[in-house]
Length: 348
Ligand code: 13P
Image 1 (cartoon, rainbow, N blue to C red):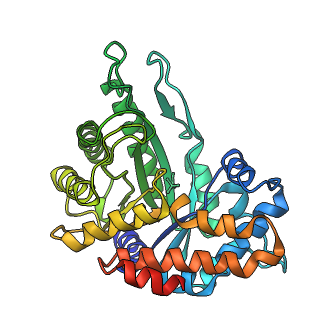
Image 2: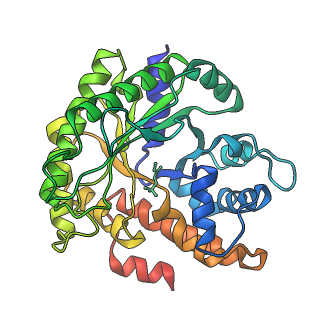
Image 3: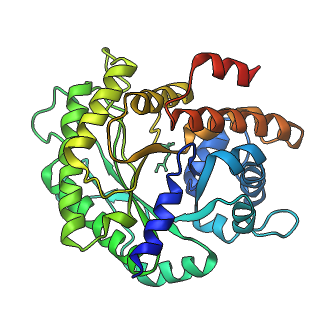
């Protein structure tokens, strides 16, 4: 393992002013996204959508350091026969690949999941490296049970440990293959829980994650963390301010994440586009931490472009304009330089 080479990639992934585009929706998930714009999810439509994103000049050249791809996409060609991987590289962005096989029910722990995909991973990573991937992603899913539930309250320590152990095994295999692992333990924001409960669970999860990474010999200098922010569940009646989310998220990261990690790239997890930008911006405005904090957004980078596109060729320019705008705003947020005025001016 060449740790310097891994560190060089990881540092580039979190270049100030830039972040990661998560375009690794599985066929099922992108199908749901396309349903929202009443577009059938075919091989060609998925190609058209992603090709349009990867050809968006300003966004890709200035604000996207890397793109997470799905197995289909890393093998796919643009309409003119150029590989999508080459389109990404031409914009000086790094191709990456989702390698987990999804969250499945965890035996013995009703209501909780374990992310699968370790079997055969060494061989798959070797193939992905040849296809151009220089970083990978694995997502563990942690769900917080309803606040009134005591028996069977989740997450259990067992589920946290099992998921983090798998993340560490994955990360170690990635580094052996010359690939930077993004480790993503996502505490879901769909529930009724309040922000304090999310804070407590996120702290437990991250503490356990770094113990597991250490035990599996994972080199932190060549690793990127992709966490959730500390937010309240979407169904909680009391929603925290932008400042509270930023302060709690910084606190939990400072309490649990070693300084050797080059960068932290957040998932958006169902936050609106604007709120995801504002939270990231506030954290970078507050500052005072050793890592670059940036974005690895899926929905919060793509949603407005998806609604502008609506699956139609004639909306290509409008979709690229929407993607450019969101990428620029998040680029500013990664520097703590976003303001509502700049947002309005860029959107004019
Ligand atoms: P969202 O930003 O839509 O949560 O997606 C990021 C991601 O890669 C989830 O695994």
